[in-house]
Length: 91
Image (cartoon, rainbow, N blue to C red):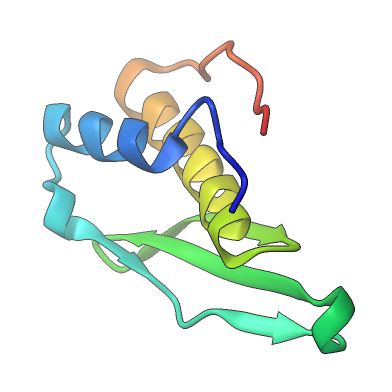
């Protein structure tokens, strides 16, 4: 499993706690896998209170969740503060 230095799922949960939502508001879609076992791509969607906030695709399920969390973090940050975070996604 890759070591994601930014830990976007943790950052998203922390931001949720500072928002009008709670960490229980975060739900994930069922993961979807495409392609052969040796070269598959995972897809997943992050929902906050039933609203889609971020989609992620990656070669690992963990990576797809991190990408979706990063995108959801950006959307929620924009909703709360009126701007997108400046730190780029890195894995």
